[in-house]
Length: 237
Image 1 (cartoon, rainbow, N blue to C red):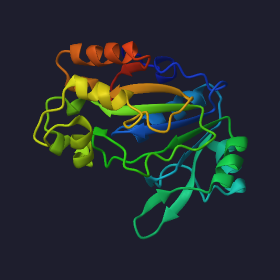
Image 2: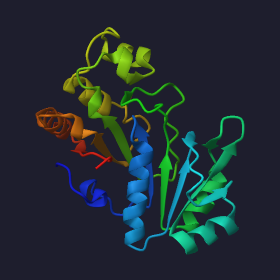
Image 3: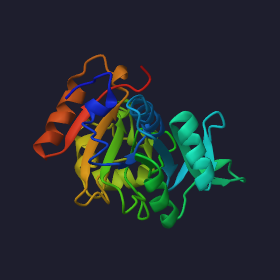
């Protein structure tokens, strides 16, 4: 499937069926989460956004420190969505809530969107031993990979490049190919790690960098052969 202006439709998301969605993988996770939050709000769904790792703090957005019930419900009434997370003063970043608080947060909103992985903005990654942190209540996992990795050296485009090189059995100087993206996206040691029996989709971001969309189509088709649904688009447009 190719890009559509509506990401809920593009990713075939039914908020009634999967009200807790975790987003993992490469750069674009935060942008995708807030795009989904905006589309859900249009559908009159209340949305809470949180993280199980770390996430940039955006002071202009409604925020409920530590997922405090009064603040969460106030923001949902006024804005239709809220960010609910801890805050690390030393780094200035948002951090995770307790599992108990996540369970409460799920009950206070219609849809809970979770950034469950970190990549420092780089387009591809292979998770370390402790990653990703997918909450037990998650019904759908979306793996993100940036198409701007194609043709670039692993060492310059991958988060934790040494893990990616080891996983792909390639030199850090080797360019990333469509086949590499397929392998990372489809593997239980890659973006599919921790998915288990949950629903899973792959979103290929930054399709606008490609002058020819055939690599995106090739990746999506190869993933479909492995029973993984993949779509592509560009969150910047």
